[in-house]
Image (cartoon, rainbow, N blue to C red; front, top):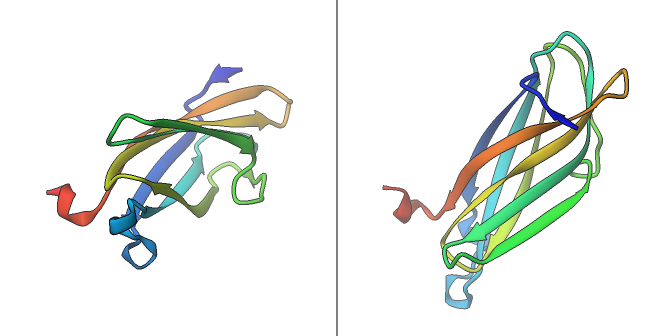
Length: 125
């Protein structure tokens, strides 16, 4: 597989206070990902890989098919957006990874997911 700039990834994360239990070291975060196809041909997301790191340096790897039960096909100029979540044992952490994609000719490529922060609001400033 090759890396490709054909797909733009935007991430927005937020702390879910109502589902978190800080006294039990349970911090729940949601993240919304928007994928935009900047190329001239349709692409399909077929898999994902995440590296989740908490503030203690503990790493968790997650990989699997598609995202949120889908393998979206994104047309040129189109986008796909989804929201998912992560649970950490610390109030601060990071996520990063890549998507496995394929074009209509069957050529596979990776789309990098840049590192982004998961943090409770009081730690952001």
